[in-house]
Image (cartoon, rainbow, N blue to C red):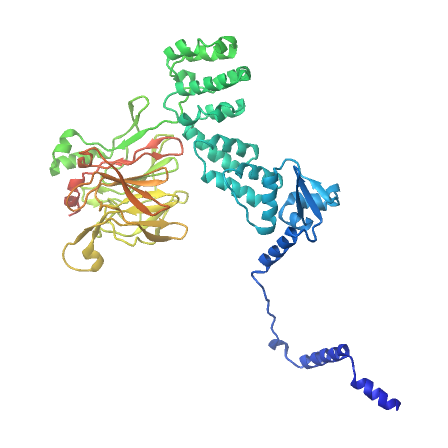
Length: 578
């Protein structure tokens, strides 16, 4: 009977025992399987982090499992300590370093607005935050205090993209208060560039003496004359009586020797605040003794640099003899014109003796490359760099191929493109343009290079006999990051042979040029964001009939503007090519 009972018990073994037996059996079976046939696979669910956040946010919204309440000006924000500590080093330190807040159920948050606190708590659980003009500065302050780096950077980026005349001073102060260096530099540059539109504003007149002196003392202050800087200082002085105590520091930043003696005598010297402060009187006396002295270096100046020249006779006559005489001396004359003083200054002579060379600006240097020497019937590979600071020329590594108007002697419609590295002094090839272009206009915008218009020899592209010229209105863009050329929206007009381009306020402007039948007087503007062209104006009648090219001013890092003007007898260009 007992044996039967034992047998029945063994037959009625528990599920757990059966599971253990099956596991033992599995191990016995697997022992006979070669290790090489067993593989390990890693399973990963991409949506898991999002689902975890969504689950934690549901718990927060239902006040479930929350172990801390953030109290901010009467508003409560139930949260989970481990969530706060995971997205903010401020909270991580608060909850893990033995501070009393680590055990408190309610934690008071000082120095943070309730709206910003709510936005950051929501960001901790959703990875999303809504930024607007109304909340960006308070949100930046809160994210800076709580060390939420991603939101802090997002606020800085937002303000950089939305800066304008009305908010630039506030943005500068906000960036300075929270040590946002890039935003501070960007806003300061904007203030200096648009100073004449800003210095009347309440925000500027309310600045501290430290910030006013930083602005007025900058070499980059964009003003047509120094008198305007003094007028800004006077408006700031009259804004608040306490400003009189610091006026000497402000006056010291003004280039008084650059102000006319009559203005110093009739306006500046007669002010009570100047008479009251000995330091101010000393500045005035020194300025009167050294009017327009060079030691008081001027602010940024708009300077036009011209390269090459033609006499009136050479413009009217187009004989081969006259052209050759002009070309022999054309490459030597380099001059600059200062609109503020209406004076011309002769610069270091250009070593090139060629014509139809290319000019480009990079950093504080001007680069001249290629060209054509008609007297020797050859194209050039030479490249030279002009140093504005030293007024000197330096010969650099030559190009890989000869170019004039950026074409080669045997292939006048070259699509080949090369780049030059100033640090290594090495030329390298990059992908060719999609369209073969002769005499295109080229400019740079937002780190990309645009090739605009030009002339296309259709027979070269399609390998057919006979001349077949196509005047292009096409535009293509090269992105150095992707190393690719892409087509953009075409211009409204076909343009080649002397059309000029420039970048102004984030847009590309194209002026002049011609098609098969006539020269153009219209001005077109390209919007990169919309990828559209529109006609925005017209040149004065006759400007496009003057041989040569002109370009919109280009800003140099040393605060000069250069017009990379290269004389080029466009009407005779086809004859020279043959």
